[in-house]
Image (cartoon, rainbow, N blue to C red; front, side, top):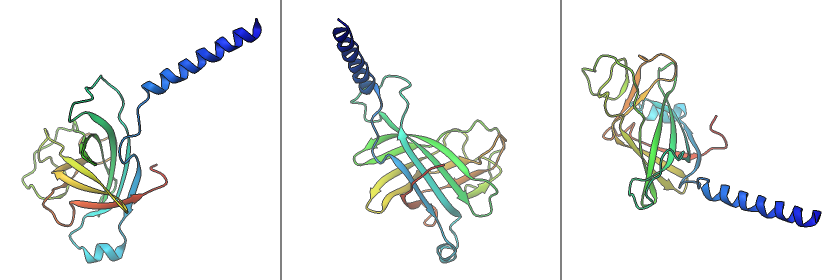
Length: 191
């Protein structure tokens, strides 16, 4: 009788594990950590490059609400993007919701709630103003033998890290040859 009860517990536990596994999010394409730190040699050869370091973590998106498996923009991943810029005291961060486009991921940047004056210039760089408070831009992630290529698809706005809601913003545009694409290599950690 005890053996039969234990077998029943084992079957129940197996069913519970199977149900939990079925509901767990799968690893999205390109899942993992990627990074690039630009050395002085590279930066001196690319004098207009303002980005000094890029770190990216791609993880499964939380299941906030049911999505249709046939939706072409079904969110499959979150991309935590961190960028350091020349002369900035802190880094600039964004978390993008990503969907598949072929072998690539397209990711929207996250909007900031900061309310500060609009910029007079639309140029790239660190700004104490906002170019467009309603659109944080987007970026594309493409697999490469070396890791992945992060390319600015639509002007990116990244707020500086920290509790200050009026902190500076970093702007990167797709037509800037020195600051629009970054080849990142796999990294062991994304702290």
